[in-house]
Image (cartoon, rainbow over all chains, first blue to last red; front, side, top):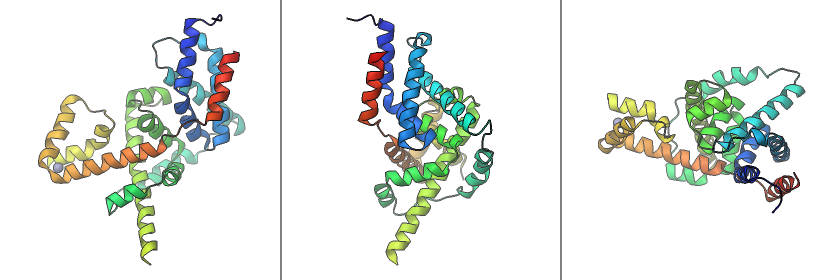
Length: 187
Length: 75
Ligand SMILES: [Zn+2]
Protein backbone atom coordinates (compact mmCIF):
# COMPACT_ATOMS: atom_id res chain seq x y z
CA UNK A 1 0.00 0.00 0.00
CA UNK A 2 1.48 3.33 -1.02
CA UNK A 3 1.01 6.67 0.66
CA UNK A 4 -2.17 7.57 -1.13
CA UNK A 5 -4.77 8.64 1.35
CA UNK A 6 -8.27 7.30 1.39
CA UNK A 7 -9.53 10.68 0.29
CA UNK A 8 -7.20 10.65 -2.70
CA UNK A 9 -8.34 7.17 -3.70
CA UNK A 10 -11.96 8.22 -3.49
CA UNK A 11 -11.13 11.15 -5.70
CA UNK A 12 -9.46 8.93 -8.30
CA UNK A 13 -12.41 6.57 -8.30
CA UNK A 14 -14.72 9.53 -8.93
CA UNK A 15 -12.61 10.74 -11.84
CA UNK A 16 -12.56 7.32 -13.50
CA UNK A 17 -16.27 6.79 -12.85
CA UNK A 18 -17.08 10.11 -14.52
CA UNK A 19 -14.75 9.79 -17.47
CA UNK A 20 -17.47 9.04 -20.02
CA UNK A 21 -19.45 12.04 -18.81
CA UNK A 22 -16.41 14.28 -18.95
CA UNK A 23 -15.58 13.14 -22.46
CA UNK A 24 -19.14 13.73 -23.69
CA UNK A 25 -19.22 17.17 -22.15
CA UNK A 26 -15.80 18.02 -23.61
CA UNK A 27 -16.93 16.81 -27.01
CA UNK A 28 -19.92 19.11 -26.95
CA UNK A 29 -17.74 22.07 -25.96
CA UNK A 30 -14.93 21.64 -28.49
CA UNK A 31 -16.71 19.64 -31.20
CA UNK A 32 -13.88 17.28 -32.14
CA UNK A 33 -12.52 14.12 -30.58
CA UNK A 34 -8.89 15.17 -30.42
CA UNK A 35 -9.48 18.46 -28.60
CA UNK A 36 -12.04 16.71 -26.38
CA UNK A 37 -9.37 14.24 -25.28
CA UNK A 38 -6.99 17.10 -24.53
CA UNK A 39 -9.63 18.97 -22.57
CA UNK A 40 -10.38 15.90 -20.45
CA UNK A 41 -6.66 15.42 -19.76
CA UNK A 42 -6.27 19.05 -18.76
CA UNK A 43 -9.35 18.85 -16.54
CA UNK A 44 -8.00 15.77 -14.79
CA UNK A 45 -4.59 17.34 -14.29
CA UNK A 46 -6.15 20.52 -12.93
CA UNK A 47 -8.58 18.70 -10.67
CA UNK A 48 -5.75 16.55 -9.35
CA UNK A 49 -3.90 19.65 -8.19
CA UNK A 50 -7.06 20.87 -6.53
CA UNK A 51 -8.01 17.46 -5.16
CA UNK A 52 -7.64 18.72 -1.59
CA UNK A 53 -10.49 21.15 -2.19
CA UNK A 54 -12.79 18.37 -3.24
CA UNK A 55 -15.26 17.59 -0.47
CA UNK A 56 -16.17 13.96 -0.17
CA UNK A 57 -19.87 13.32 -0.53
CA UNK A 58 -20.43 16.33 -2.80
CA UNK A 59 -21.26 16.03 -6.47
CA UNK A 60 -17.91 15.15 -8.04
CA UNK A 61 -19.25 15.30 -11.56
CA UNK A 62 -20.54 18.84 -11.13
CA UNK A 63 -17.20 19.84 -9.66
CA UNK A 64 -15.28 18.29 -12.58
CA UNK A 65 -17.62 19.90 -15.12
CA UNK A 66 -17.09 23.30 -13.54
CA UNK A 67 -13.34 22.91 -13.81
CA UNK A 68 -13.69 21.83 -17.43
CA UNK A 69 -15.93 24.76 -18.30
CA UNK A 70 -13.49 27.19 -16.74
CA UNK A 71 -10.59 25.76 -18.72
CA UNK A 72 -12.60 25.81 -21.92
CA UNK A 73 -13.81 29.36 -21.54
CA UNK A 74 -10.39 30.62 -20.50
CA UNK A 75 -8.81 29.04 -23.56
CA UNK A 76 -11.60 30.29 -25.74
CA UNK A 77 -11.26 33.77 -24.34
CA UNK A 78 -7.52 33.67 -24.85
CA UNK A 79 -8.03 32.69 -28.48
CA UNK A 80 -10.66 35.29 -29.22
CA UNK A 81 -9.13 38.04 -27.05
CA UNK A 82 -12.01 38.34 -24.70
CA UNK A 83 -14.66 38.36 -27.36
CA UNK A 84 -17.53 35.96 -26.92
CA UNK A 85 -18.99 35.54 -30.41
CA UNK A 86 -22.05 37.75 -30.40
CA UNK A 87 -23.94 35.51 -32.78
CA UNK A 88 -24.09 32.85 -30.07
CA UNK A 89 -26.87 34.63 -28.28
CA UNK A 90 -28.43 36.42 -31.24
CA UNK A 91 -28.65 33.27 -33.30
CA UNK A 92 -30.47 31.54 -30.51
CA UNK A 93 -33.46 33.82 -30.70
CA UNK A 94 -33.98 33.82 -34.45
CA UNK A 95 -32.69 30.29 -34.99
CA UNK A 96 -35.09 28.94 -32.48
CA UNK A 97 -38.18 30.49 -33.95
CA UNK A 98 -37.42 28.89 -37.27
CA UNK A 99 -38.02 25.51 -35.74
CA UNK A 100 -41.11 25.97 -33.65
CA UNK A 101 -44.56 24.79 -34.52
CA UNK A 102 -43.48 21.42 -35.83
CA UNK A 103 -45.58 18.28 -36.08
CA UNK A 104 -44.58 14.68 -35.48
CA UNK A 105 -43.07 12.95 -38.48
CA UNK A 106 -44.98 10.10 -40.05
CA UNK A 107 -44.57 7.17 -39.85
CA UNK A 108 -43.22 7.77 -36.37
CA UNK A 109 -41.81 4.27 -35.90
CA UNK A 110 -39.75 4.57 -39.06
CA UNK A 111 -38.58 8.00 -37.99
CA UNK A 112 -37.26 6.66 -34.69
CA UNK A 113 -35.76 3.56 -36.22
CA UNK A 114 -33.89 5.38 -38.98
CA UNK A 115 -32.57 8.12 -36.74
CA UNK A 116 -28.79 7.96 -36.66
CA UNK A 117 -26.11 9.25 -34.40
CA UNK A 118 -25.00 11.52 -37.25
CA UNK A 119 -28.44 13.13 -37.43
CA UNK A 120 -28.37 13.93 -33.74
CA UNK A 121 -24.84 15.28 -33.95
CA UNK A 122 -25.81 17.46 -36.89
CA UNK A 123 -28.85 18.78 -35.04
CA UNK A 124 -26.78 19.47 -31.93
CA UNK A 125 -24.20 21.32 -34.04
CA UNK A 126 -26.97 23.60 -35.29
CA UNK A 127 -27.80 24.65 -31.75
CA UNK A 128 -25.81 27.40 -30.09
CA UNK A 129 -23.44 26.34 -27.33
CA UNK A 130 -25.85 27.74 -24.71
CA UNK A 131 -28.56 25.40 -25.89
CA UNK A 132 -26.28 22.42 -26.42
CA UNK A 133 -25.03 22.82 -22.87
CA UNK A 134 -28.44 22.39 -21.29
CA UNK A 135 -29.21 19.39 -23.49
CA UNK A 136 -25.95 17.75 -22.47
CA UNK A 137 -26.29 18.54 -18.78
CA UNK A 138 -30.02 17.91 -18.27
CA UNK A 139 -30.82 15.27 -20.85
CA UNK A 140 -27.62 13.34 -21.28
CA UNK A 141 -26.04 13.68 -17.84
CA UNK A 142 -29.28 13.83 -15.91
CA UNK A 143 -28.56 16.95 -13.86
CA UNK A 144 -31.67 18.64 -12.51
CA UNK A 145 -32.68 22.09 -13.72
CA UNK A 146 -31.39 23.51 -10.44
CA UNK A 147 -28.03 21.74 -10.67
CA UNK A 148 -27.63 22.80 -14.29
CA UNK A 149 -28.51 26.38 -13.40
CA UNK A 150 -25.80 26.41 -10.77
CA UNK A 151 -23.24 24.85 -13.08
CA UNK A 152 -23.90 27.30 -15.90
CA UNK A 153 -24.53 30.22 -13.57
CA UNK A 154 -27.90 31.08 -15.10
CA UNK A 155 -31.44 31.20 -13.64
CA UNK A 156 -33.43 27.98 -13.38
CA UNK A 157 -36.12 29.45 -15.65
CA UNK A 158 -33.51 29.98 -18.35
CA UNK A 159 -32.40 26.36 -18.10
CA UNK A 160 -36.00 25.27 -18.49
CA UNK A 161 -36.79 27.48 -21.46
CA UNK A 162 -33.52 26.70 -23.23
CA UNK A 163 -34.04 22.99 -22.78
CA UNK A 164 -37.58 23.13 -24.11
CA UNK A 165 -36.58 25.21 -27.09
CA UNK A 166 -33.54 23.06 -27.80
CA UNK A 167 -35.69 19.93 -27.82
CA UNK A 168 -38.24 21.59 -30.09
CA UNK A 169 -35.51 22.76 -32.45
CA UNK A 170 -33.96 19.32 -32.63
CA UNK A 171 -37.31 17.67 -33.18
CA UNK A 172 -38.08 20.07 -35.97
CA UNK A 173 -34.74 19.61 -37.70
CA UNK A 174 -34.90 15.83 -37.41
CA UNK A 175 -38.42 15.89 -38.81
CA UNK A 176 -37.42 18.04 -41.76
CA UNK A 177 -34.50 15.79 -42.62
CA UNK A 178 -36.62 12.69 -42.26
CA UNK A 179 -39.31 14.12 -44.55
CA UNK A 180 -36.70 15.12 -47.11
CA UNK A 181 -35.37 11.57 -47.01
CA UNK A 182 -38.85 10.20 -47.63
CA UNK A 183 -39.38 12.52 -50.59
CA UNK A 184 -36.02 11.56 -52.04
CA UNK A 185 -36.91 7.90 -51.79
CA UNK A 186 -40.26 8.42 -53.47
CA UNK A 187 -38.94 10.29 -56.49
CA UNK B 1 -58.35 22.84 -25.88
CA UNK B 2 -59.31 21.70 -22.40
CA UNK B 3 -57.34 23.14 -19.47
CA UNK B 4 -56.00 19.67 -18.73
CA UNK B 5 -54.71 19.21 -22.29
CA UNK B 6 -53.12 22.65 -22.03
CA UNK B 7 -51.48 21.65 -18.77
CA UNK B 8 -49.94 18.58 -20.41
CA UNK B 9 -48.71 20.63 -23.36
CA UNK B 10 -47.15 23.19 -21.04
CA UNK B 11 -45.49 20.64 -18.82
CA UNK B 12 -44.62 17.57 -20.86
CA UNK B 13 -40.97 18.58 -21.11
CA UNK B 14 -40.74 18.97 -17.36
CA UNK B 15 -42.55 15.67 -16.96
CA UNK B 16 -39.96 13.95 -19.19
CA UNK B 17 -37.15 15.62 -17.25
CA UNK B 18 -38.59 14.46 -13.94
CA UNK B 19 -38.98 18.06 -12.78
CA UNK B 20 -42.64 18.01 -11.78
CA UNK B 21 -43.74 17.66 -8.17
CA UNK B 22 -45.83 14.62 -7.24
CA UNK B 23 -49.15 16.44 -7.58
CA UNK B 24 -48.30 17.64 -11.07
CA UNK B 25 -47.10 14.19 -12.14
CA UNK B 26 -50.41 12.75 -10.96
CA UNK B 27 -52.30 15.45 -12.85
CA UNK B 28 -50.51 14.54 -16.09
CA UNK B 29 -50.88 10.82 -15.56
CA UNK B 30 -54.55 11.03 -14.59
CA UNK B 31 -55.31 13.08 -17.65
CA UNK B 32 -53.63 10.83 -20.20
CA UNK B 33 -55.73 7.91 -18.95
CA UNK B 34 -58.78 9.61 -20.37
CA UNK B 35 -57.28 11.59 -23.26
CA UNK B 36 -55.90 9.51 -26.15
CA UNK B 37 -54.49 12.61 -27.87
CA UNK B 38 -52.36 13.61 -24.93
CA UNK B 39 -51.40 10.02 -24.28
CA UNK B 40 -50.13 9.67 -27.84
CA UNK B 41 -48.40 13.02 -27.72
CA UNK B 42 -46.60 12.30 -24.48
CA UNK B 43 -45.67 8.82 -25.65
CA UNK B 44 -44.06 10.14 -28.80
CA UNK B 45 -42.26 12.93 -27.00
CA UNK B 46 -40.87 10.48 -24.44
CA UNK B 47 -39.74 8.01 -27.04
CA UNK B 48 -38.06 10.66 -29.16
CA UNK B 49 -36.34 11.94 -26.04
CA UNK B 50 -35.19 8.45 -25.09
CA UNK B 51 -33.83 7.78 -28.56
CA UNK B 52 -32.02 11.12 -28.77
CA UNK B 53 -30.41 10.73 -25.38
CA UNK B 54 -29.46 7.14 -26.16
CA UNK B 55 -27.66 8.26 -29.30
CA UNK B 56 -25.86 11.06 -27.46
CA UNK B 57 -24.45 8.79 -24.76
CA UNK B 58 -20.97 8.19 -26.12
CA UNK B 59 -18.22 6.58 -24.11
CA UNK B 60 -14.69 7.86 -23.72
CA UNK B 61 -12.23 6.09 -26.02
CA UNK B 62 -10.10 3.40 -24.37
CA UNK B 63 -6.90 5.30 -25.21
CA UNK B 64 -8.11 8.30 -23.22
CA UNK B 65 -9.17 6.03 -20.38
CA UNK B 66 -5.67 4.55 -20.29
CA UNK B 67 -3.88 7.87 -20.32
CA UNK B 68 -6.03 9.30 -17.54
CA UNK B 69 -5.46 6.15 -15.56
CA UNK B 70 -1.69 6.53 -15.83
CA UNK B 71 -1.90 10.25 -15.12
CA UNK B 72 -3.59 9.40 -11.82
CA UNK B 73 -1.11 6.65 -11.05
CA UNK B 74 1.90 8.88 -11.58
CA UNK B 75 0.58 11.74 -9.53
ZN1 LIG C 1 -55.54 15.92 -23.33
